[in-house]
Amino acid sequence: MKKLLIMLLVVCMPFTALAQEAEVTANAVAESRNVMQITAPFSGVLKPFDWELGDVVESGDTLFEMVTQKVYAPADGAVRSVFAENGELAEDVLAQYGMVLSLEKANSLVVNATTTGAYNDPDNRRIQTGEVVYFEETNDRDNEGEGRVVSVSGNAYVVEITKGDFESEDNVKLYRDDNMSTKSCIGSGKLAYQAEIGVVGSGRVVNMAVSEGDKVKKGQLLFETVSADAESTIESAAIAAPVSGAVEVAVQSGMQVYKGQLLAKVHELDKISVVASVDEMDLDMAKAGSSVTVVFDRYPDEVISGTVAEVGKIGVTKQNAAYYDVTIDIHTMLEILPGMNATVYLGK
Image 1 (spheres, rainbow, N blue to C red):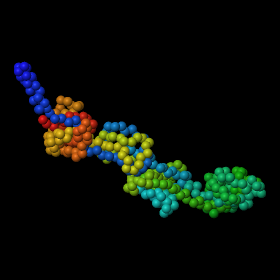
Image 2: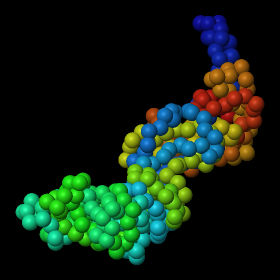
Image 3: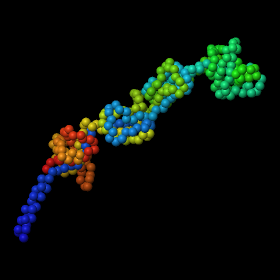
Image 4: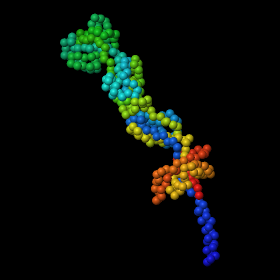
């Protein structure tokens, strides 16, 4: 029995010694030292994008673009006055000027007409908006023109000129037939310059696409606006990456977002640390300035030296023990990317 006991002691001693000398380790993960959060500068809808987790972006790359409210020219013409500048609220401009900009139509002359002098037929006194009419100058019957009725009020109506060479204050007679027969006469009128078109909008002006004096075509972009909660310093509806790195997207294409909402994070790749989850019982081995070694799962044969940079002040309970985040600066030429797993060796 005594011999057996001695043999057991001899066998067990090496394992006891090994246990006492076992390395204290902690699970860890690589993280970027600098993670930039990209938030929505104003409320709105995101245009489609195709960024995926881990895509690499360069500083200045457009990450997202917000949908803008586009205002187009209602007719061919020339921009006469622009009252708003980029960054201004359209509502403030409207309160002061009644419009964001004014547009003089290419066909600036109209005939202010009435049914006075129309041929004595009830149908000749029923004028309809949109119908094409013909007219001749009272003092020069060879000077003929054509136009379209754009508004009717009682026995008065307005004709926008589409053909002809006339001047303001010219007097004309108007007809339904292009041969301008007496029986088709629907009245008389005088030419005048029509009022400029006041173009309005709402929200913060982000792109004034025209300047005073510009000639524009119907449907041409005049200006764009975004949500009124945008800052007056806004220069674009595009949101750029402030630094180079790997992107972590927090939103989806076409999503409605609100000012201050997180859109993405950009992890800088040239500044990587290791964050280890250390048991509270082992914190004495992980004081700031302590030297440790790190082995990444990707490089199992490479031992990397590291220095404890910071110890978290708030622990997380796991299986009745508190664990603290310990940030470790590493020194290596290996490619280490955010999210890589590692084991940190704190000591014996």
